[in-house]
Length: 464
Image (cartoon, rainbow, N blue to C red):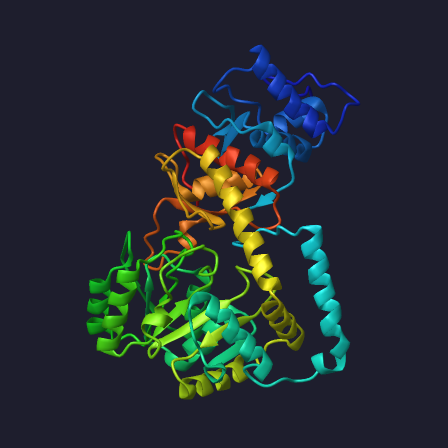
């Protein structure tokens, strides 16, 4: 039986690399010479594999590689076509690089040799008491660790007695302890309409109902919060008022004051997640400084010192609330790891944490300048010291389609669905420009995203 003859067949240069890359190279060369034209359909993968006498998976990899280079586009049920004028023009350099994960919101890692040596020497110093590090510690943190936490909170203008402060293994553990203390199952917690996915996960775990509150340019609508208090009698208000994840919005001082007034009127405690509050050089005062009697303040170190440093400080409204939280911490996470707590305490007291924070802030600002040079004007929201961007998509892009397309090019981003509480996500994505990626990685990934924003396909298929 004769082999099927495809409408197009590549001229392969044998012995010059993997076959799948040679096929992708041939597609690019034939587009350049006009042998392949815009909107031309490539042969079905099985037909081309049979004609060339190679495995089907090799052709599938070749078509995927060509799509990464911006040469072709594939649609399930229609086939693979040469990109037209409005199709994506993805720089080949991006496609050739390793995957760049811009989905995890982690700070950059600007470790100079001097800073690295300081971090290593700290590890050696706390190791001198290794037997002590392997024992159980006080639930909620030792006296020394709580004092260091109070010292760290002074950087945000908060004066907290160590007795009101708890040391816990990360902000997520802090939120778990607070929510399990304040909100019984089936009760209501209010939050921003676009909120931290970790809160959504905890609400599901604890069987809590999240009621989303609309936002404007200053933050949560205080009148909407008052209406929700009257209608739902919430057990708490959760908010991320500085550099909100995902939109990077910072709530104004006036709005913080208004929310405290509403919360006091209805007797609703506020959970202030200040994960990014230490990054800006200047920002409004924490809600905990306006309403200390009703605010549970959470300051994690993951976003301002290091994502792997799983440690957070909780400032409770009073000593009784602190004691109740300590019991919840003991029941859920037992205690912060002594090694981690000792390391954080040393870094806070000797200034190392400030050096790391300043380095993160400086590197984040450099990456923000990169974004400003590469992305279309007014296409995204962010702040100078933030390490994430909130990109609003132009028509006809769909957030899920763009996320899938970028994933195919080796770039991970997060669609707005992960943050929307009301099930009506906007056409937007969150892009982290921190993490282990270098500035060059970020530059090339942003070029790819900018190209997609400027040249959306004529008909963006729905992603199922």
